[in-house]
Image 1 (tube, rainbow, N blue to C red):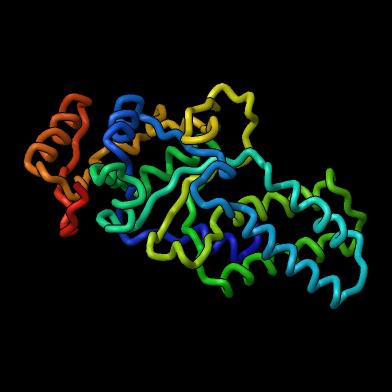
Image 2 (image 1 turned 135 degrees about the vertical axis):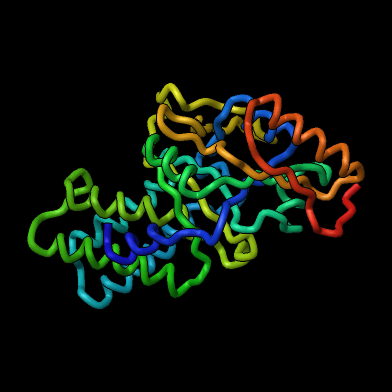
Length: 277
């Protein structure tokens, strides 16, 4: 990976990162001890991945204007749009565990939970399953700087030898792009302070890939286990209960769930003064 990409992936949150969920989602996560990481093309943001492809294509076209017609640039411009169908899966988190916009967006009928995980424990189980964690990028200058470095590194490598779409130089370029592309988000989502667990490309024939029912389509997902032979991301989790008309009972129910699953952790009430019922 290029230096800027490496430096970005080495950044760490200030504390826990939180996954917002419905009641059914919380039950599923703790009962199965896994996340269902969604194929990126089926995320709520319809422009996922396309945004990164459009930015990279614009940089490639600028380089073409500056340097003239180069086979490597032609190859990248031709094949980048194809990457939109790449089988990459991700699970979403936020640095903020008690955020009104998240309660509204991810907790049906105003009742839900955010589950706080220790970053290092979560990272360990992700890496064990050929995934990584990264912080989403909203700033346009930062996005362009990362993509320019990836593209210029590719063009530098391609200057001394032929490039084809199946060769190692172009495949290295694609791998660098696949690492960064799922982290580039529209600035309108900045309040979410999002972090993501991202898989490297998977086969849809993988035994851990399945399909679930969505609102209008079947949605492919990857079963990301929260416990491995050596690590568990479920140690000392934190559960925050969304604004709720029966807060005392909701807190008691969440505590009972932890006890029944033999898990330790803290259960807290949201401090957001919101009434969604």
